[in-house]
Image 1 (spheres, rainbow, N blue to C red):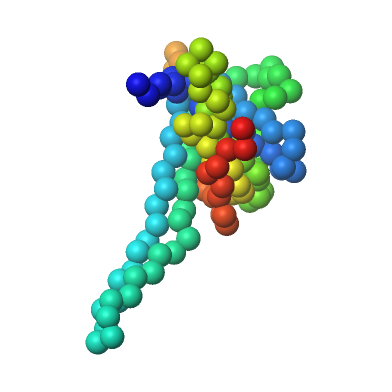
Image 2 (image 1 turned 60 degrees about the horizontal axis):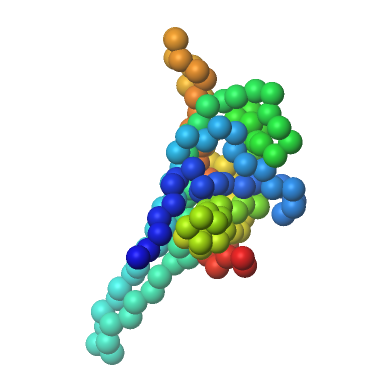
Length: 147
């Protein structure tokens, strides 16, 4: 029977240098979406179909905490990367679940480059400071974990 994992095991890792990856602080949810445009042209010679490069958007939300550890990225850093148009390396994957015999990257794995395209902060009366973020890939994205 297939084994599932909880969403808490899926993490987004970011780096400016393709090393020293850091996770986004206090994420409470995230999701990814892959889209591709398909063009079909009918001619007297037959039908031709073409696809553009798929676009993958990864987005999420969290609590904008302070006093971060060395392996976390703050909302403020996400906002700075978005404003500067900084090209980042990323890995989005599930962590291992040894009890269920699931290895890291077995269920969710994306690896490549892209940009933070949204960093929105919300400060409501009587609530913690929250934020939303969005990341759009560029170029080739690998979906095969090296395990």
